[in-house]
Length: 78
Image 1 (cartoon, helix red, strand yellow):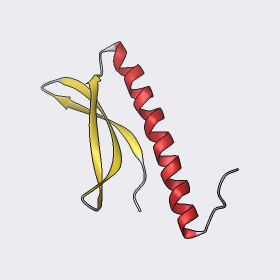
Image 2 (tube, helix red, strand yellow):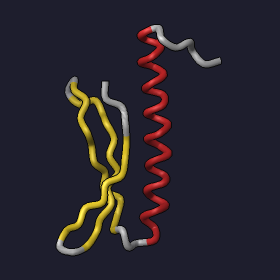
Image 3 (cartoon, one colour):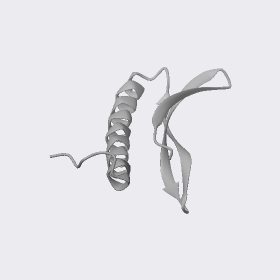
Image 4 (spheres, one colour):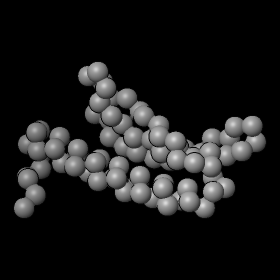
């Protein structure tokens, strides 16, 4: 089981760029997917990263709960 998300900063030709990654099901497999956010130097990039991280955190938490319930390890939330 692969659950997770994160931020990656890559340097290309001396400039730094930000990606956010998460896992998705594609063709029956869990794959790591990178989503470009913007240049690190752009002040708007921070807000976009936060919005994406909030989205992926909610997805990851729900996926964990779904899988745990399927295994019978955790009771359904009330």
